[in-house]
Length: 383
Image 1 (cartoon, rainbow, N blue to C red):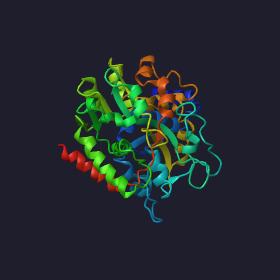
Image 2: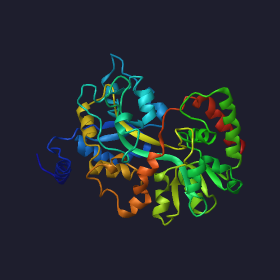
Image 3: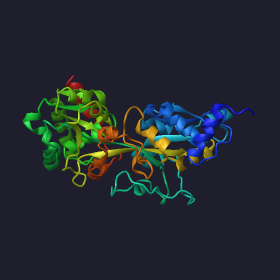
Image 4: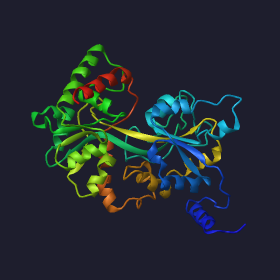
């Protein structure tokens, strides 16, 4: 066989990760079932180096879509059906642990004792820790590996909004007459509803009494009526903040604000309200996790990725997917140089322990089917 530059590069990259590079790459790529952001070439290339086979993206429109796409294949499945099966899936933690695993769509990694819980943290001292997040329903084995996270908190222009006031009185600060018409909302399908519930003083992760449902309906309409902007994307809300059209926006996280901070807006930042129904918290973090589907093609290639998920190439690719964003492995030993100094400042890296320690882990919203239409109606009423 003629040794080409491509072979040498693959071999060198494999050595950098401690993985032999002499095995031939598979001709047909394996499938990664994940949101569109994970289709960037740098990330897929880092997976290819680790697994020694290529991956392509099977786009996941939303966590709800994953269940149908990961249903077990029937006994008489064709070779084409087996080949189309995803080898890896990336989904938000509450959906993965609360839906995909109970429905038998993903395979636990450590049920045989071969995959102990990860020993790194999103932030020092964060509770619940990652090992707790990874516990399955029937034992202490892994459901998946953490990849990236984002906050669902409050983006502020610190020149106009007091972060200490948010610490003291929480989201009720929005009711200050000074902020009427000076705040924005982000119509994020995943996190606006639970944030609106927090604003109304409700725990979004439990069933609600009838009186609480009525309180939400009144509060959601009040929240929408007084908003200056209802942005379709976080980027639109950040632009409104940077241009001075609003002073506060929610839900916004570290990654959403990073580009604006890199562009010279250090006065924009993320604040976590200090009072709320979640053990005194009024914000949460959302965690993306990598999992192994059942009937996974080439499971050995997939498991190689789990073993190297905190390596610098993968963490660097995760931290720069679709722009700068927090990656779980940035706190892992050996990854101190993944971010530049400016990127660390833009992501408020040193503040992660303080911010995350005051957030609750995102969970499923059991009243979503009843309350999402109420929120949608409130959004439509102001258009």
